[in-house]
Length: 496
Image 1 (tube, rainbow, N blue to C red):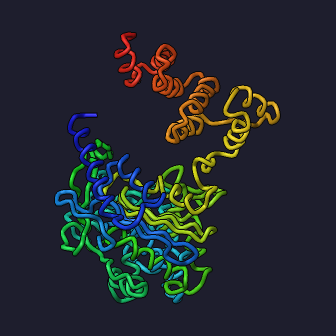
Image 2 (image 1 turned 90 degrees about the horizontal axis):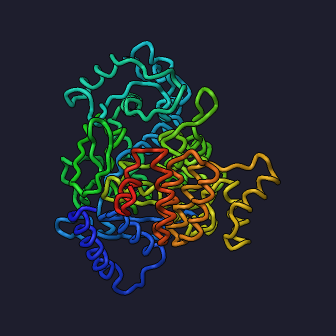
Image 3 (image 1 turned 120 degrees about the horizontal axis):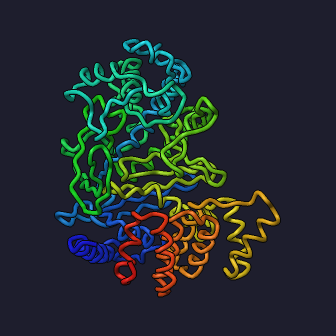
């Protein structure tokens, strides 16, 4: 850690601790408050808003840290946060509202409603636009800047002349052009700009009194600051770990993709309105909107191993246990709605790079105990089975336990990444000795992987087993001569 980062981290922790006292002058923080404050400290997140909905009612609101760092303005329920691409979920609802009114059908090619398009686009359905499997060329560049001179006409003409990326339905590819088209269709079919339609049919009906379309050029009362540790270098997003002020402009025509500013409380009102029939009349419409889109080959596609699917404007978390629909935005804000559990968790931050989607499940775990990572949630069935057997033996003889399970079932196998991930999860739970066994098992299962020796060496070193750490770092370096972590450790140990 550089001296600058270290100083900032120290100041941040002090400020957060001082503000925690302001947050709860007459109330002791509960477990969720303490968990969020821990995550804020770990990731240097300035400000957070939280809302939890349970059984159709607002269960909890929380405000943490600072909405503005420069002036040390505490976060309150009134502060308004940018939710970026979570805006697409509002577009999904708008399209389903039009389908309920008989004005469109999502399975119909969008060409029926918007004719000014190239011939090769004409087979693409509205559903494929919503679920990012259209194959359309993107109307932004690698640095996420809108193509053209900033006008809608320029952007539209440029993107129409670009080649298709792939055949419709062939794969998932996050795409903003589809939402430009969806905004145009809403405007065409309703006779009013899509932003006005969404304001009237969602903001107003949900009593969202602190929700607006806008960008960094607009003066929005109680607007939280916007910070980032992410920089775009030659089209690649890199987290440099240093806080910067962040500014994002969204032209009006682009705001079907991104552009809503809101509060956690307003989003809670919106979700409750959706679930109580105020926004969509039938449960069938909601179920259809939340259904993960299938590719031509029957598979699904999404952002990553967590948000691994995409429905109609709503990213999805497809899994056997506690599936979710999960709009995410700007690497800073997210909400998870768990349809089978009557639970929703909303986390808004003012830090691009906070990625709260990666810890929302843990917040849900405070309400649903079997969702806690410490109880094995998120592990594969085979890894859960190994965990259960190890608990019976107080985490002794892991290699023997694995061999026993393998002998009972020849198809029993583990993946390198999941075992490694479990090891680091155990470290996060302050179970380093248990993690040590897990990492050692991984070196036996995947002997040709430099990464497993690196993780094992790192854990050995943290527990004071210096000689053993050196041995494993050397193995890692032999397999990957560019492993800088191993090089630094061995140099510091005088054994390079």
